[in-house]
Each structure stands twice: as structure tokens, then as C-alpha cells.
Image (cartoon, rainbow, N blue to C red):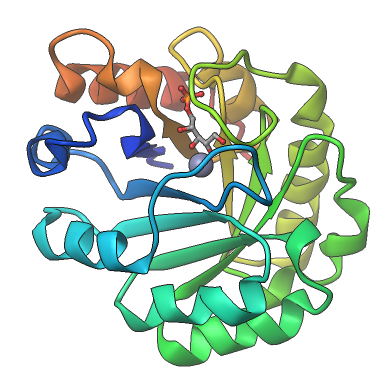
Length: 222
Ligand code: DX5
Ligand code: ZN
């Protein structure tokens, strides 16, 4: 398996995003963190900015919505052409209906869970999704420490994906670095978001290569 590395532009320079995007052209997807200062205590950008990011980005967008009222807002991100749109399970009463709507527009549909949200209720819904995001920090900010206590959720997801023969990407986000990525890969993750670990230092491309190699060295095979 080739590990997917999705850098988070939350750690890029917001007044020079185009340069920040060009520096990660070797990434699989660009992770775009949309925050509304309601679902999480931080604020980033909305559909207009994300549309412009999409116009100039050399790689497709992996949009992570940390917002309330996703039934109203999520479809717009699919309509502007995002490759993948992930909403939080905690932010909707009907995740299946929303996933179907996103897929019908042409985006991959993702569901995210905060560290304290159990995964069991969602295991039977996996055929409705293209990606599950297990948050490995409390959503809202970059630069936090990886929470290893979230790993049993990945093990449960990975077992269910294998049992049911599904093609669902298992993503982790928060505190992913060369030191922690192997833990998540061994637990079953195949798609890795990294903000500070990619943008720290002067060479994001070599950080991406380092993370990818570390993940592949620890990848769990069924
Ligand atoms: C946090 C965001 C992450 C963040 C990760 O709520 O969802 O995508 O950018 O940043 P690092 O990799 O620095 O923990
Ligand atoms: Zn994120």
C-alpha cells in the first residue's frame, strides 16, 4: 500500500497560500480545515476562499469541515469541486443522507469523529462512505500532541473494512509526525494529515517523503 500524505494548510502562511500550495505539490491531497468558531473554538475560511484555493492548487482538495449545520453547508464544498468532503458525525443527525448527497454531486464522502466519540455506531454505515477520519487530537488547532488512546477505533475500522471487503480510506488527523505516524499506520490508517510536521523547516517536500516512508515501513497488512 502507498500511504497517502495530505498536508494541512492550517500550518501554511495564510497571506501566501498559493506559494504554500506549490510547496506541497508532491502530496496526495491538500487538507483544508474549515472552522466556524462554533463547532470548534477557532475560525478559518469558508466556501469562497476554498474555491480560490481549489483554482490554484496543484493537487485536489480534502476538505475537513469543523462546522455546525453541515446539512446546509457541506454540499456547497462538493459543488465547488472538492475531491473529498468530510463532515463531523457530531454535527448532523443524518450522516447517511448527507453522504449520499455529497456522492451524488461527485465528491468522495467522509465522516469524522472527535476523540471522545465512539466508532461502533458508524461501523455498519461504512458502505455509505469513502473515508473515515479518526481525530487524533481535539479538533480546532494545529500543533497539538497525538492521542494514542484513539487507536482502538482505527483497529475496529480496519477490521470491519477487511471483513466487509470495502474500499474506505482510514484517515488520521492531529499530531502526526515522523515519531507518531507509524503508530497510526500499524493500527490501520492509510491516509495521514500533517500540518506542522510538513510545514516546519524549509523543505515541505522532503518532510512529505519522510512521513510517507515512515508510514509505509509500519503499515499493517491484512
Ligand atoms: C486540527 C486540524 C488539523 C491540523 C493538524 O483540528 O483538523 O488538520 O491542521 O495539525 P498538526 O498536524 O499540526 O497537528
Ligand atoms: Zn483537519
